[in-house]
Length: 260
Image (cartoon, rainbow, N blue to C red; front, side, top):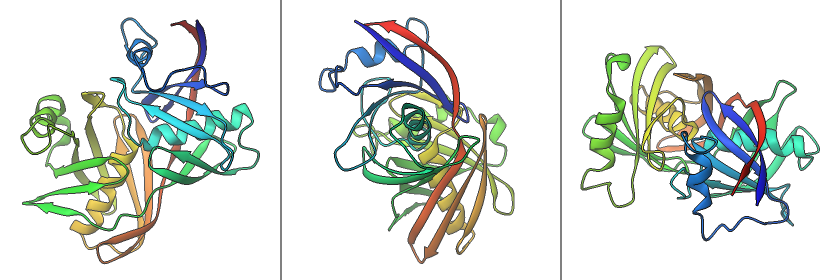
């Protein structure tokens, strides 16, 4: 069976997008996911995303990590909005869709910059000088002095496969404060099991950790990644963050077909 796809990236976080309107792909037996996501023998991606029609929402996004596991993906969701608009599921510049962790709202402009509303965050954990924040996916955040010298793969794996986290997995974010309300983030992603050029839920978690660390009220945090620039806006009351938006580009790369 040949499957048509399009490739998108959100600040270097790349995804294979498939219009699965007829629900031809089996989402229970997902051996086909690694075949697509492999960089040497497949298309290559940090995730595979199916777009399906939904009776209540504009569309449903089904996200898979390269190993076939599922989680919520911020940059993937932003790219899904751009792809769904191209397919005609999104009629206006604002959309409501269903993702792994439930309903989300997003706004897309003419330059395919997508603002994604994230779920509210009601708690965070301080682990010595580090943070644990769940932004649709679980994130461990640690602050460093020279982020470019960090061995994200080795250091990230130590935390991800530690006794505390190895069963369910955790994404590990290394954060450097650049300027007031500006941070640089590098992320080791579970499911990918490597560093990615950007991670939307990680960027969001890192921005919220910055707000906690610096006692920042409602505001906007600029976030640099190896793949490009994003921003996170939020409202804060104590440990609760609401009206959280992840903002950045969603970029089309190429189209093709793959035999499964």
